[in-house]
Amino acid sequence: MRKRRPGPFALNIRDIEHRAGEMRQETIDVSAAEKWGEGLVAVAEGENVHVRVRLESVHEGILVSGKVDTTYEGLCSRCLNDVAAPVEVEFQELFAYPGDEATDFEVQDDHVDLETLVRDAIVLSLPFQPVCQPDCPGLDPATGERLTGSSGEEQPEPIDPRWAGLQDYPSDHDDDAPRVGVENTEKS
Image (tube, rainbow, N blue to C red; front, side, top):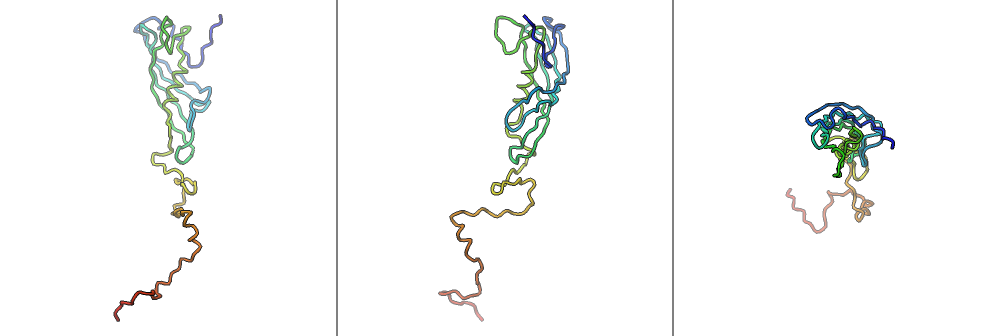
């Protein structure tokens, strides 16, 4: 049986394995092998992922605590401008020693593989409705233009289609003309 070759997020823990109370810190810089996330924003393939991790040996396995820094890119949910912002997320998980009980994460071949843990932590921290700025006004509902870059001209109110036919009538009024049925009450 061939052993699986560890990936870039796999850390060798042979020196602290089954030694409760031992601890080690490591730093990993890896490029994302694929796009992480769906929707309006995601961590792009090839984006640098910086992981600072602390490995602690406990009786049940290896307790992994860490912090991940990277950058997401995508579109603003209001105005559809390009958005890029840093992501900083913390995580903690127990990698159990192989045994009878099923666990989500296990120590395998003297390694802990952090890829799934790091990817899930990043994807779950991505904003559902990202914005380019907190007070982004979005798009004009009538014209579809971005309000952030608009010329500042007041847009006319949309006309109700039921009244649109009245636009064909002239709007000039002769206010000086006497009105029929109304007496002139001005005093000379």
